[in-house]
Amino acid sequence: MLEAFQSYIKSHDLFRPVDRLLVAASGGIDSMVLLHLLEIVGQPLEVAHMNFQLRGDASNEDEAFVQSYCESRSLLCHCRRVETGNYAREKGLSTQIAARALRYEWFEELLRSTQCVYLLTAHHADDSVETALFNFTKGTGIAGLSGIKPKIAQVRRPLLFAQKKDIVDYAQTHGVHWREDETNVETHYARNKLRHEVLPVLKEINPSIVAHFDDTSQRLSGVQQLLLETARDLKEKKLETIGDGLVLHTDWLHGDARSLVLLSEILSDFSFSFRQSRQVFEAL
Image (cartoon, rainbow, N blue to C red; front, side, top):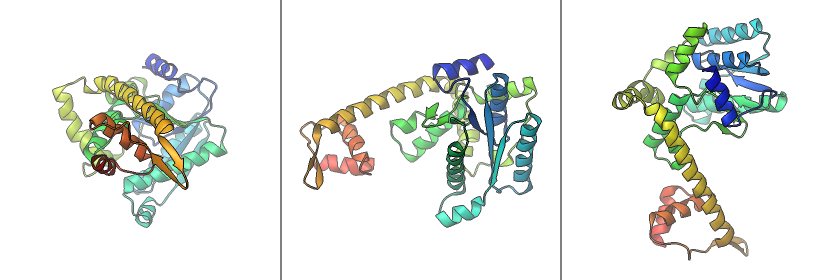
């Protein structure tokens, strides 16, 4: 797994051996395996752990576990406690969305205030499939169906090559210790339901579904890039400033799916949903 880890980092140009990295660590198996691999290769790093205070004593024990791990290895550990429940109620968000917002806002703050170049998260191949399935259930475009990207802005995800079973095998073989989050097995969360009820059925149908999804993801990412480039060229040629407004010339439009998708991509810059773009297209 170490060789595959290093190969994935190099092939996707995720970071350099000299880059100082901020690693998001929950104390779970994925992030602890990521830390173990980074330490083996001698990567300069700091650790960030957010205590969401959603699981009582267990949340505090997770925090203490990560702190103890870092102290034993002389790693700088950043910890923050947040009132996730209160924040979610104030903002009218679900608990999971609130936790994500709080987490990434803090991570961005740490990247600005430290010498860390990138933020690393421990998302893996199964997470990418789950994300695509989750987006599919809500309705999504090409980008949403392509799963999790290995890098976006300052975020890097060097474990996307690995399946969950690979991570578990590695942890057990190398004696990596971790904390179990009991809420991960609860299926009232949509993501957990996909993880524990839907994906296992899909793996029964095709045991290689996770491995094959990487191919699908790369192809969809390529299609998305072609779409963005074509839409960009159209905007340069067909979007004109007249007076105080913008005019999109439509002489390129035809009554086909290609034109609809391109129009929706252009109008998305102006906060049009796909459904609204389709209404415009049909009216034209």
